[in-house]
Length: 346
Image (cartoon, rainbow, N blue to C red; front, side):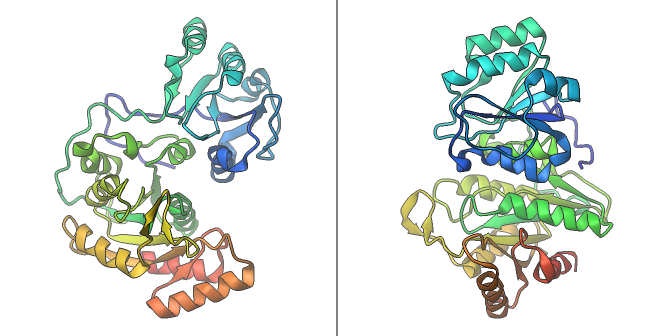
């Protein structure tokens, strides 16, 4: 999926295939990492492993770590993103079992795996790795603003958690299906696990955000496209710094605005209204043109998961007419999504 990146001394390359660990999770929304991997990287997922109490499943085969190792798995991914990003005490014996079976452990949680003595000891005993996704390379440069060869697309949002990763992945799949030379560039924990590599932008020191984006999407052949997973929103008071650094460093030729029409206020910040799609288009062009004066908006990715098929189709048509841009839901696909792809490649 990925063309080689400039070599960093701490470049993150993940051991695939994966066994997905769901712990004792009962809330589906907490298993979004596992669901994302099962959906977008099914060919890299051997099965799932749970402990007593779990009611959530990805639908993959249930395997023990030893069985998964025998089937070809190289690591066990913690597929849970719970409140606080913690590793429950009830999980420890299962994680040790995976290490004893010869699997590395991959985690996108805030808690560092090596901070848990049982895991550190088991990893050392078995010669296995404890891999924390939220650990950016230590030798990132500052941004230069230098124009790079190749083409780039960045997904941007009216807010957080409304489809930027899914949109970039869907567009990448559509580009490659059409024979376009393209790579998906991951910037968040689940995206990195799907791609097998990337840079966790929310863990990069602010001074190096733009530089990290430049490293993530280096010079390429003129016809090559990088589809870059967006983060946050330049209108989000909490995360705008990450979003702006990613915008400047990505130097996108094209961007797609991702929006959830049911969301009225910024996630977790009820005092701030979600900006309109038009505001995001205008501000992204104004700020993005600093490093790429030719930046343009190709269209809108609408999250219509709260609507039935008829309602979603009517809404997308109405928004497309109002904005005079292609509007589609990449999960639903269809003619509207193909029109969005056309506009991106135009």
